[in-house]
Length: 119
Image (tube, rainbow, N blue to C red):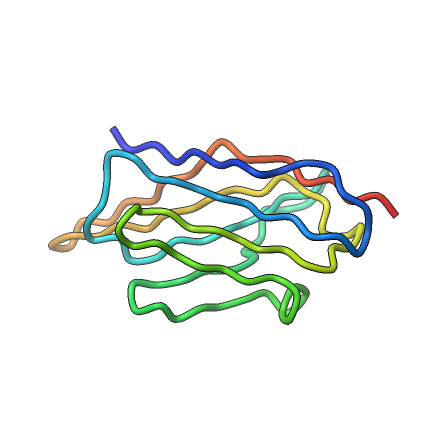
């Protein structure tokens, strides 16, 4: 059974940094993309950053230059380093994994971790 376990959320002040980690268990091959999404109260879940199997990264415009996503392919893990946090970054952050093999595709999600940024 595939599980994504996130850690690292918490409360910080604006301008501070925070790192999120996500480790996937039960899966270590054919991972196409690992990503972080976030959902603020009353808003839709949106992509924050992603990294594919080749190491190519993609960021939401709102976090470019402040957030860095990285991946440990041997541990099926992904981290999100968040610098210069802003109050608008506050949300529940979800780890997301895309897997595919011979035409079969699966999406897996973590349970979410809360990030709170005080002004």
